[in-house]
Image (cartoon, rainbow, N blue to C red; front, side, top):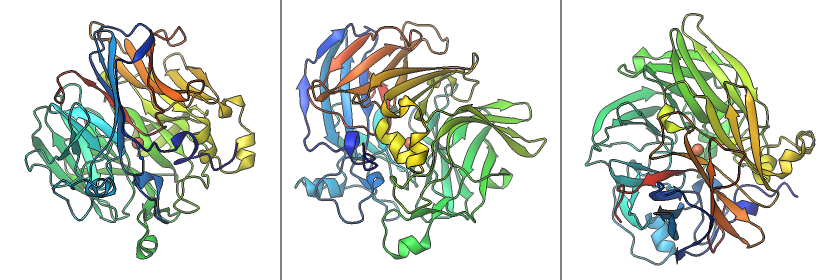
Length: 466
Ligand SMILES: [Fe+2]
């Protein structure tokens, strides 16, 4: 195994064709109540990579499987047609609104909201709507209501159905907090000053606050001056701080808490305490400290709990699990509420990319060579890893509630793409979340390889056209 097996290579290696396959073979039984699509986005460069290519800038490709009545009706993979993608594919570029000159690849997440399927990326780009068959419809600004892009990790408030979003342009000193109702109306828009110009991949939402991450991976004018399309660097002089903004307040109402420098791509969830907020996160010791690359190494990520105390005016950190892992998900009916279960993933290609060096890598146990989905039971302080094997690349696992199930957290399914090295292609694996160590419920056999990618969602039937 070489240290080159990281983003864009190894299990991340792009595919070169769009495929439609119908009536997929299945091992096991697909639960009848799974009526919808499992969609997952990720960078999949189209055409020739230029010298300054960065994995995070690769064209977005959505991989999806349609499940209905215990059958796997189809698999499709489709590039999201932004103008650069259309040009590379020699198609007529679609006309769409570009905000602030930002036309970044829509490659990071795909969600359902307001009856539409939306492809997302951070960095100022509008969501891109795709149809139920994954063909691109175009940029979507919610009837003109959205005047700034939204990040790839919006939070759906389960009590209202509102979608809370943050967005920013690389280099801008302002981020925009937008709330989009279940009906698809932008009902609130609030600018937040961020003079450090941080990269801000995620945030957190509670019933009382949004938690803003202002961390030291920041816009670098020096890098931008070299026309680096990914001009973010670690700046040790830049403060690391977390901000609590009351949901009905404004930027001037933010209480900031300085913390030791750390990098957070992903929050797990957050919830209110009488005197503050608990926020679980995946922390990295740093990011882009040795340049813009993702394979130079910056130390292992781990699962941590941050307790933000408004009375004491400080943040306490506690490590929940030191095992290298990323891509945290929860039962999203618990967004903003205390959560018991967290699902994460680890893959050898990722562990290598996180290693600060060979010594760092060598210190890990055999899990470094395995593809694992973890389930953490925080009440029991128990973590269980489900191993898929060295070459069975696995990424993010999403939770889907059972339709006829209870509202009890964890009553549902976990879905993830897993590579099958024997077939040289991938499976959609469906697990019972509550019987996490039990047999797989079903394995949908996809006739092609699905590369590792970024994030996805379960899109129930009725969202997006058929
Ligand atoms: Fe992400």
